[in-house]
Length: 174
Length: 174
Image (cartoon, rainbow over all chains, first blue to last red; front, side, top):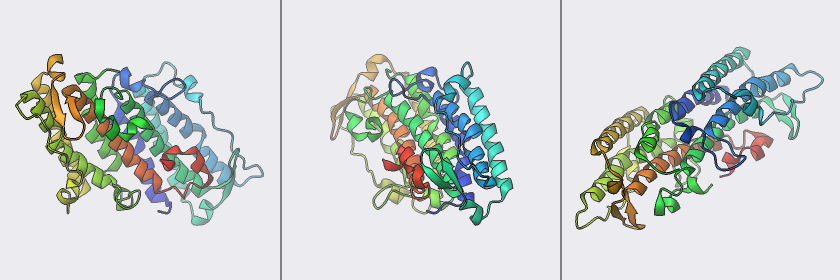
C-alpha cells in the first residue's frame, strides 16, 4: 500500500481517541505497568507521543519543506517524557496529546502538500537522507507501534495468570 | 500482577470502544489489510471476537460453574467469522461486539464470583485442566493480543513506505 495523505491522516487522527478508549480511567496497576526495568509503561508512552508532537514530526517536516542549507534534524530525545510528564495525570496527558495532534494535523492539512513536496529530502542524524513522504508514513507506523506496545505491556501483567493458555497467546512472548 | 475481577473487567469493558476508535470509518485499505495469505484483517478479527463472545468465554465459564459430570469445553471454531461476518459492514460488527460484550459482562457481574468459584476447574479440549480464573485472565489477554494484531497488521501496510526508518520500528518486523 502506498502512502497518501488522506489515508495516513485517517490513522493519525484516530490515535488520541484510541489511547483514551484503551487507557482512560484504568488503575495504576495497568497504566504504570512495564515489561521490566528500563521499559515503558502506557503512561510513559503517552508522554513520549506528546514529545513527538512537539519536537519530531511537524518540526522535521518544516525543515524538509523549507529546504534551507542545513536540513539535518535535531536528534529526538527518547527520555524527555520522564521530565515533562512528572506530576501530571494520565487524563491530562491524553488531553494534551489530543490537542497537539489536532493542531499538527491542521498544520499538515494547511500545507496542501504536492507529490513533489512529498519527495523532498531532509537528513536524519543517524539514518541519512529521508523524504517527507517517509517521515509522514513513519509518523503513522510510530503511532500504531506504540499502541501495540501499550496493549502488549498490559497483556504481560497476566502472563502467569493465564496458566496453560500462554502457548496460545503470542502477545505474551514478544 | 494477580488476576482479580474488577481489574480484569476494566480492560474487557474498554475493548469495544478501543476497536471502534481505532477502526470505525477507516477505508477498506486499512480494514481489509492482512499480513499475507491465511492471515487476518482487522475486519476478520472483529468477527472472531464476536464469535468468542457467543461461544467461548461465558459458555465455558458456565461449564466450569455448573461442575457437571462433563466439564470439557467445545473446541473453538477459529474460522466461524468468515461465515458469520459475510456481507456485514464493519460498523455493524463493532456494534454487535459492543452489545455482546456488555451483555456478557453483565452476566459475569451478576454471578458475584467468589475466590472459591474462581478456582473451580474445567477441561480444555487440548490444554487439559484449567481454572475459571485462568479462563477470565485469558479473556483479557486475548482482547489485548487482538488489538495488538490489528495495529500490527495496519502498520505493515506501510512497511516499504517508511524507508530507512524501518529499523527503528520493531512492529514492522514481527
